Figure (cartoon, rainbow, N blue to C red):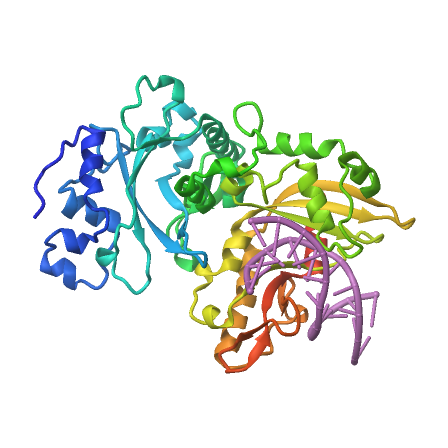
Length: 459
DNA sequence: GCATGATCATGC
DNA sequence: GCATGATCATGC
């Protein structure tokens, strides 16, 4: 058994103790009681770590797990992507949102800050097949500190990762946005996609058993929610190679909406030709399929694929081109999926799922009858929950058919929201299907009629 | 060489 | 005219 070899009132001592877990799983580094090892559902890894590794019982109130040190402990799963990088498996849930009390709080003295001002994060390698006690902590833990930079007198704690003041401003604004929804009696309309880095995610069982909460300024019951960091934000923390990205300067002085307005404002209503001339960027060839997308990046004056703030917030930039009737010319494509992989996957682990959870920046160009194409409007959008359920249905249909060795995948006529279509370089860009047949790579698409409705309803 | 965002082409 | 199939250019 592990002894109390650390000081519960010291962040650095707790951190040093946590550091010794690196490279090991809980079962490797502690002698767990037999009943825990044999238990089928062993429960939450964070709780087990506190109990059996730290020999610590956290207070059952709004204090952090280690009250004397002011430190909250979190464990979170990582997974490897195709490029071999470790990515957050899911959002990092921080603390429950109390609709009754948040309306009376201010950010600096909020329940959130009281509990989460300093967070010790332990990263383990997620694998569905591996029991939680056998999951290895594959990288050094990290302490995330929400204290404003100016209050830090000395920085001798090398492991502390201070949240940059620009990010802190975004997070604070996100927090106030969520509070405002409750003040407006709209807690039931809150969605994870409303905000940028800090989100109000659903918590507890969904479906029929879901328990709903009352809210102070409306009779409507609202879903239980918790504050969380978006996976995209955790991934930025993990990589921290921000110097390779262009920044829009979003932070204390500038928020996302303002930044977008500043960048695009002067070009709204202008023709492609005019914008092209102003930015000295023209079609690179007669058949430059990505021209509008590339022009959009020029408008944002970025060289990287997207601004670093968009990377952190998980914002996807998509261009939509409308015909003279105001209808999208094309459906909207997503990355090609792997036939053999999808049949093993759960919806929540799919690429399509994570893409649809993202926020989108839609950049809309419209061609008028005289042939003039104009930058029409730019706006942020999130797919409503009910439509994500429909997209899920299409995804599940795809999976089911592939498993049944039926390669007729869902067509646009089968769903209001999404369909499956080829996404290859050419007719030779094939991939193996479960039926054994090679088939041109495919991807999920959002139907153009669906996009048309999204545009109409967001006007 | 390949993933990606996107557009082109065809047949009903 | 539209749904579906096919393919393109770019950038890393």
